[in-house]
Amino acid sequence: MKKIIVANWKMNPQKPKEAERIFNYLLKNLKTKTKALVVVCPPFLYIEKLLNIKKKSRSKAVKLGAQNCFWEEKGAYTGEVSPNMLKAFGIDYVILGHSERRFILGENSQTISRKIKQAIKAGLTPILCIGEPREERKKGKAFQFLEKEIKSSLKGISLQEAKKVIIAYEPIWAIGTGNFCPADDALTVALFIKKVVSKRFGAKTAKSLKVLYGGSIDANNAKSYLKQEAISGLLVGSSSLKPKEFLKIIKTA
Ligand code: 13P
Figure 1: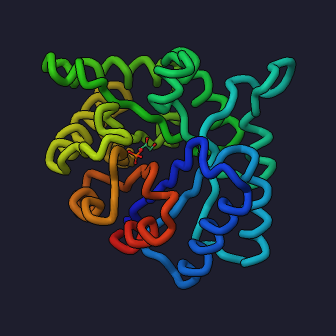
Figure 2: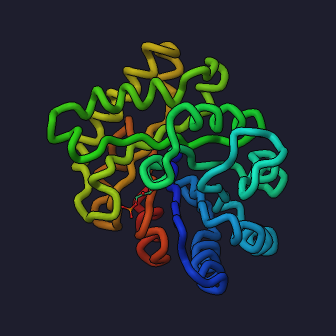
Figure 3: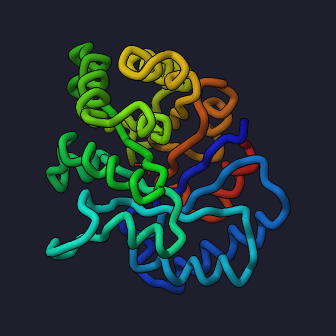
């Protein structure tokens, strides 16, 4: 099974030229058939430009994703972007429920589950992010926290919809800290996530569920996760903005 490597650029880079440079580097170096499925999620503003570059290069090695979308199809929602708009542009994936959106922007699982539904309806593959804060882990309550987050984020999601969801385990304490979650621990959590999904949607759905790991991934630690069968890939933040480093991660897969 192909591993999935997702680049979450977050609110970077600051100049479109830099976004083009990073993307061009990837396309140039991933021309040949890659063993991994690579998804780049830039800020909305860069999507069109990068899609045009991709079209021109005729590269099939990289897909594009978004970092968020709204839970309604259309209408008076100032500042929002609908999943339909993303699909119409040629976007295939959307990251939803990232901890930065939950904790900085006040998103909650209720709205995230609505976003998942709408994204699937539009034909996008949602990458649902979950992850416990440091305090919960310290208190020994990480698994309880994660179970609640999974259940509430998937509330109202049908079995057919659940089959289309990818889950990314991103412990908050590991994001942007260099303090990555050891691969063995991440594997334990990946299996736990599948168990929670199995209880709700059945063993078959849990078995085929793709669980990614994210949090301080770099070219040195990527392999320890990718060699685990139950970890289907990686969600990469800052290392995905360093094209050489990111390419190394992809090649590890
Ligand atoms: P870092 O790789 O920078 O720790 O970020 C991880 C992340 O939040 C990806 O979504």
